[in-house]
Length: 160
Ligand code: UDP
Ligand code: MG
Image 1 (cartoon, rainbow, N blue to C red):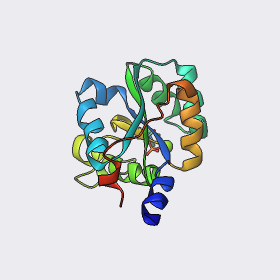
Image 2: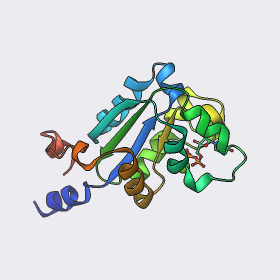
Image 3: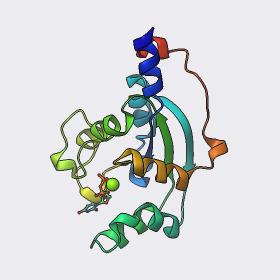
Image 4: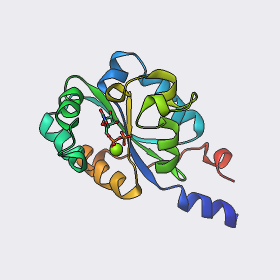
């Protein structure tokens, strides 16, 4: 029981994930959601939304000045994307591993980018790179009231 409570308290970590406009167009939304569901993570918030360049400049503020920044912002604003919050043990780091490397060519088969993409600017999905950026990104993309606080009956079969 002690181990169970320990796992449950650690399992409150959250990350921000997005299926980018290329992933939506290519019909990969269901597959990407499915991978996180099947792994055992909990969906806390989700929306399909086309956002402004201004919003994306905030989201990618750390990359301002990079040669690909403007193209990235324009591409991300070019169509609807699926913004999500997922919760669970080590979900930030595990989520990044499930995505693969930034460059799809360096991503292993079995990862989302390694299975479905080739080019850096069309790498299908976004995932927060640290617990701290996850907090900022969740705040930027979602109102607190839209983050669902609920228990998954499955958790006793996912966490020991
Ligand atoms: N990107 C790009 N060219 C680069 C580096 C990044 O087009 O040389 C794009 C790529 O789509 C990436 C996004 O910019 O996903 C954000 O870059 P970051 O370094 O944060 O990579 P990520 O965290 O998405 O793996
Ligand atoms: Mg990043």
